[in-house]
Image 1 (tube, rainbow, N blue to C red):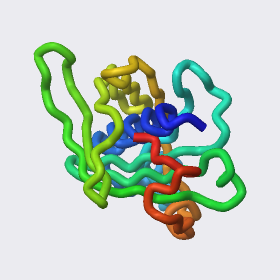
Image 2: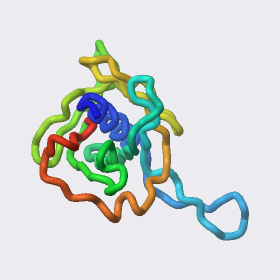
Image 3: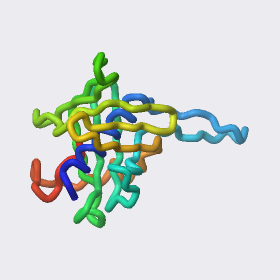
Image 4: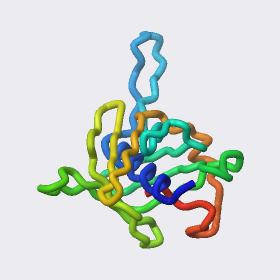
Amino acid sequence: MRLNFLLGVCAVVMLAVAGVSCSKKGNDGGDGGVAIQPNGWMLISWNEDTTLSGRVYLELGTDRFTLYQQIGNLTSAGYVPYTGTCRMTADSENGTILSGAYSDGEPWAHSYRVESMTDTELRLVSLDEQIESVYERVVIPDYVKEAPVTLPSRSESVLPLL
């Protein structure tokens, strides 16, 4: 899988998480149960392609992110978590820009223009290559967060999407 694809996916997920809070809310059924609210984003399209070779989830906070990706050779191995810092800034030429760095200090390969961010969808476009990543608001499954795959840092076979 191309590095640009992975980078685009990470950026989209990060923006989605920034606009989401984790909470529980009573459901409308009146039976006393709770409905879990979406807590992240899942990549559904990259560069207009919806046939992705795996899954990518993004938790995006106001200044932190976690990217969980299961791409290519890892589709049967589990999810690789990437964490770090992120920030959204206003730019007079490009609007809202999302950028960040991984926890090892390595900056993202791209910065992203936030095309739109709604309750259900996040659209990011890389500034340098104009590749669009589309994320859908979801509840990130517990198994994604609880059983991460550990890989050597910056493995050539698994590059983070952002």
